[in-house]
Amino acid sequence: MIGKRLRFETSHSTEFVDITDRLRDEVHRSGLKIGRVHLQSLHTTVGLAINENEPLLIRDFESLLERLAPVGASYQHDDFARRIDVALDEPVNGHAHCRQILLTGFATLLVEDGELVLGRWQSVFAVELDGPRHRELALQLDGEFGTSSLSPSGEQSVVPSSMRLAHRARERGEERRTEAGLAPELVELELSRQLLVDPEPVSAPMRRLVEAGGKRLRPKLVQLTAGIGPRSEPLRAAALAAAVELLHNATLIHDDYVDESTHRRGRPTVAAAEGPERAVAVGDYYFAKATRLIAEIGNRSVTSTIAEALEAVCASQIDDVALRGAYPGDRDSYLRVVRGKTAALFAAACASGALLSEAGPEIVDALRRYGDLLGVAFQMADDMVDFSPSSGKPVGLDIRQRVLSLPLIYAAEDRTVGPEVRRLLAGSLGDAEVGRVAELVTISGALTRVRGEAEALVDAAVHELETIELDGLRPTLISLARSAVDRIA
Amino acid sequence: MAIQVVERDLERLHQLWEDGLSEAYRSYLEAVDGFEPSAQPRLALAAALVEVGVRLQGLGGRAAAPPSLLMGDLCLARASRLLADAAPQSIQVAFARAIEEMSSAAAAEQTAPHTRELLLRAFEAR
Image 1: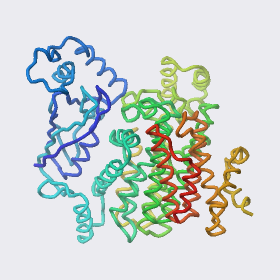
Image 2 (image 1 turned 180 degrees about the horizontal axis):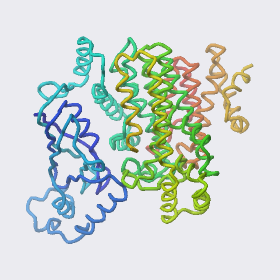
Image 3 (image 1 turned 45 degrees about the vertical axis):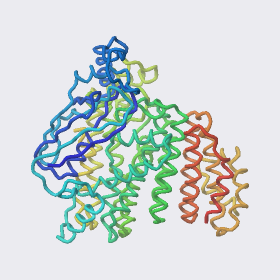
């Protein structure tokens, strides 16, 4: 049995905080193979819920709670004249307590094959009802454990134990290393450590974005490829991986302002929550900080690789916005933008990890090509998610925001539905128009075509790995590439 | 000679070069006098790009409209690449710290030191 506490900060009075990825990380880190995760709220105004992380649905939940227990209704709990021993800072929060009993304060989740057992659209939420505050959940994991990065006492001693694990694995001559053996907690710790020392006006918005989850694909690629060459140092790899993640998030903060996005990862964007001025400043701060952290690693090839990728990202973002004048554009323009905007950082993550480990140039080049192909496939998969009703994002958001999208390009070029798609896109896009465009994209077969292309790109990415020596990493890199398009299967 | 070297690094930025980037560039040439001659133009351009970039973004003032912000982002990214290619580590770090100082002040709605002062000071870090 392992006992832990899951701590987080909320930023709104009512907030659905998706903790699924953090729970998954805890399961991976513990080595729990089959068993249960028990979760308990330690507060009377924080509930738990398992449901779909879809921004509009979350607004529905919030509206429901407001209807059932409105703020400002007459709660006896808020009548301090009648209560005994009322603390000076006692909040007026009868509504929050009443809402909490409509939810649950505890949950048990099953674990099988080392993974949380959750339905495809299920996410686990801690529901803040009286925020913003610091919050804490109690967590117990019990069952059968395999290899873990926790000490036998259950106490985390992340750095030494992960390094010991890596060392033991090498001693045993284990060839095949897995994603689970990456010590992702090193990256999370490094991210937390970096955010801890930053000024609050910049760290608070970035912390919210980082803690909201994300796939962490780029840091995973850095960590994996940093284990390939003769100089494998998990701590340096984690520092680079965390910096790459910060850089990626910095670009997202500016992108969200440019795209007028209101939500990311189920939370309000920095621009929407705190205004564009703060978004510009936070993006700049973490752009600069990430480049500094990378420079401080002291490997000039790594610094140049990431800097070149960042330049490609920014240049492509300009092209992307410019192309919106001829929306939805064409395939060639799409590929040019995506290779810069998304694939460049994937490729740089792969190459920089390998460079850090002092892998040979042929390995670095092959991994760079692998990352480039994977990045394009990943973006195509992401485009398709926009047409999935159960993706966690509102259907047609890309259409509404006129974001470059390959399925839309193909639908607009289709002989049958193309004229109507183009006519709709040329006008103003309300709910009805967006819905109709999404329908036409599905009818046109564009989604099948894009899926085929994404899968072919993944095959090509895997092919890049065939001729190089990867010290047992090939299966993991293949699996990671396949998972990039699996989400659209 | 210096201008010729810089030309290769001005892709997509020619209009900016006409609109004040060249002036900022020249103002930094003196500060890079002690560096390797081949690195001097790129270092001066990096500083000029940071100065012009944060101004385009509206950092510390009213946020710029998206096209201007994105051009500012490209300026910062180009500067970062130039420094990665031509500057010693200490200068790369000092430039990053200068931007951190400006942006954290902007986020806190405080007045930041003048950009040019910060960048000239960054050149002293080598």
